[in-house]
Length: 625
Image 1 (cartoon, rainbow, N blue to C red):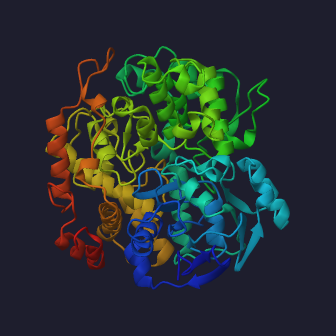
Image 2: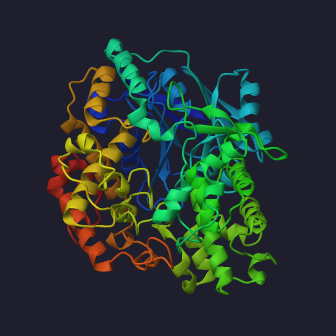
Image 3: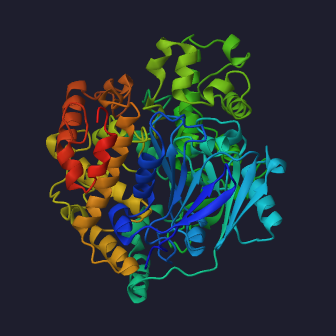
């Protein structure tokens, strides 16, 4: 088999044993990899109603068909489980080197089941799988854990996925950290790993992944490098988080828990500020990627700083910066390091801290709740203190560590108005009042509010139109970002399928692969005579399986909603005249359901749609089946 290795590793932690599964080529061609593998596995192997933190949940690490090849944007892998944060489908993607190493060890995926009788870490070195006691690693930050694991194994080139104290303490926002600075951050997957007594999963591979057409693989690698200016040029030199002053001007920067309006400190927390402060020491990248989008920084006088944890990306800067009213870039960097060291999702952490500040401002939370801590917009010291309380599960931090819905359950129904979440997952740092289809994407995302398998309307607006790329989807004209017309819902439907496809193939969102080149990539890797139609069906299949899983677990169309805050305009600035229209949102949601072949009221995939996608077996998992 080309592209794929043809082997999936199963690890049963309850018995500390492993086994090998060899799926058919038809399985690979149907589900692709990444999100497709995860959705198939969860629906078939996680029993209905499973407690996400029980031994019955499974944790899946999965690669895509191009993982392992030296091509920009092909170094990602996916991690998934039933989410302890949402109670539904959960997955996240990470870049770096871990997925490449797994593929070079001869594995397309690892399925972890059961719960170890004591804390362990697992090492995969090519075909050898070994189990090691990890009691001495408990409480260790992620960098120190990875370093210790490599030393114990005497394998300095091993790549390590680990949890920090947040995952050990089962924070429902805990992340899985790969090599200290690449996080599968969303959905609380670190808590699933912690619940299984699995501290780390180390991988070392010495094999080469075989391509069906190595010359075509080299040509595609060269194509990306030669066309990097238009495929990923916006990342040049500084990575994400550039031009926050411009984002502030158009209303896309979240301010004070998405209340919105102007944030005077925008430019001072932007990527340019790292350069202007002379903190930027270089740029790093994932395996074989020419984009090199990750900032490396050195902060003078910061005795807490470890360069291995990298620098905050845009989502982190906005979550702990403008969304908490904080303009102190050094404090934002410290919050980023606390989260990476302890394994905590920065988006959900920033969201729940902003909720707490606004609740304190409104008198819903008092010093009696916070242990005397005064929570104020722009107070970096109190923000960092509260974050450390969340890591330690100290006082109210024990509540906030479990996310938005746990926080609201503690503070009462009045506080729900201030909770910026969908399906329990905190909203990413992009404004749906500006990007209307993005708001629809937040509503229908299987993992709760997510920006990565979403669309960003401003990219398809007049003046920013990528016509050549979108014409291949039949989208011929630009559309204003605030509109949520039938034409915009069609654009969202098509592009969201393509985004899910990227999470099936595990292709980086930052590299602007045209669809025809994705087809060429999969053909070169696998030797299959795939078409764009076949690949789009892979993405559509993944969306439908995640939808079926969520419906089976009790999520309904009522969970496809945005916080009411987004129906109101900003208090000032570019969006002071515009809030989302609830009737328009409802109509767009039902239209999207219809375009997907789902029941237009309930959002349940119709049996004919599942049959058309070769998912007839999934009908038996629908409620009432």
